[in-house]
Image 1 (cartoon, rainbow, N blue to C red):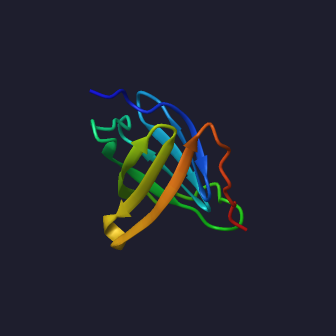
Image 2: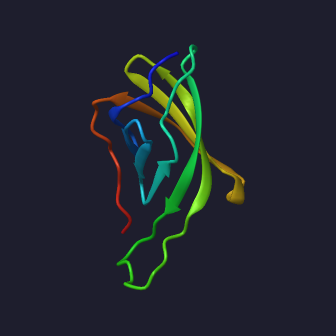
Length: 112
């Protein structure tokens, strides 16, 4: 069985830091995390649950609660390349696909 994905991955509009416990994602004006490790099958495919946290421009108020949406992170890993899409059932939308490269710096824009 293939090993879980670990390390830093970057691409246009998304950065991902993966560990054996899960992954943290940083999008343009949003973030996310998986609830478990990204573990590809023998064909390189993976699917893992998690959460998406939409952001917004301007300051974050001290009493502000962060919006948390259930998400499904799916894609493939082939060598040093990962393709990932994020499905948000509550909004009936899929983000991506994003192409990430292991060790590459992400190109992410912050909210204004």
